[in-house]
Figure 1 (cartoon, rainbow, N blue to C red):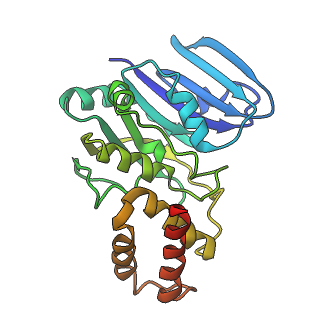
Figure 2: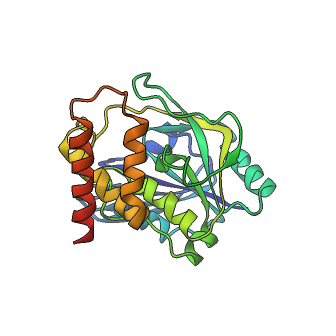
Length: 259
């Protein structure tokens, strides 16, 4: 079973990222920058494809790597994570022990106390109720299953796209919609810096409008009901925008998506 890491990054000028991330498997690095260059080389006995491309957008970056991947198991990654030693063996063992699992999410410890990562203490099945708390860098997939199900990343959401983050949520829900079985693993694969977000500018009007667009994309005709349930769940949390206005903005996003 081959493992391959698919890294989305920007403006890299050399190959030092491989050491910084502690890459111990084959990898595809998509470096969005201001030049077009393709490099293939070996790094510590592993095959590396380094694509420097004059393009923008995190969804496009992940798809660029995904369509060129050739390993059995693919790990999506950002450039601020550091893998622990032996991560390849841990992932391989997990998928061997769970042959019916088509995709999984793994734990990464956040180094930023202001932006902690949710940690799964026990391995569990992923479903519609618990799948929205995981970033793309935590996702691993069986390549063949993803290809056969025609699943990729949306170009509408995430950095460099019209709407704010959500491409990772949409990817996971698409997997569930296509009938793929997923699990959240209790294994810890490394750390993530989680420094200042490139897209989050606070809980403003755009945040809620974009969330409405995202929910419409994920849940279709059930999107309004899901939004109401989410807002009721967080009704006691302090917010500068009233509950009524938040719902209005989210419903506006649903309407915008349906145009």
